[in-house]
Image 1: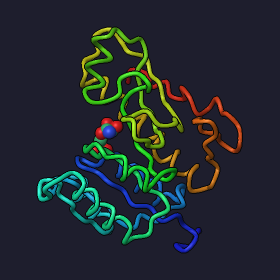
Image 2: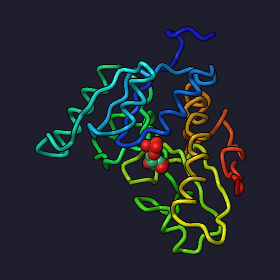
Image 3: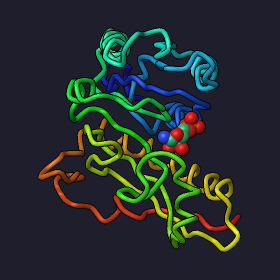
Length: 222
Ligand code: GRF
């Protein structure tokens, strides 16, 4: 059993239902993820993810963007809330605010996001509908380091799956979400184990480009 002191201190930011948070909690409980979730911070007081965090005995905080006059003021408050927990990693798990350059630079190299597409395809919102409209044969999810360009930072791991005839945004979202729940905890584990480096804008695992980082999923029709 890994002691709490040896676990990587992590703060998780979310805005919504928190199924990715739940996947992380489950992996920590299963002994597969050596992190200490110091706090779960939501931009949205109504986020269902807050209840999941509380049910797991985690500290929760709310930094509601609507109560700050500017994005800069919101982000300063968010930085203060996060840094009070001295995290070595900050994870965006369904955090639905675009973050500014100052915030991102403050956490350079220790800010990770999950995005529901095979980046660089379909950055931004409504990824499943856009993949279908574009006639994509494959779709999936990406975990990446965050840089100031939205959804464009170095990719840690991706999971791909086939798009089936008759898929809707909802059926696709459901299958992609299962992959998200697999690859986000895995990326956090690699980070916590000190196995990730960034060289020339690319992520290396154990110092090498690793084929397993890409297209590892093949979720089929259940
Ligand atoms: C996920 O699809 C994630 O990729 C995106 O927002 C969604 C969050 O889902 N950034 P949940 O709140 O973790 O259930």
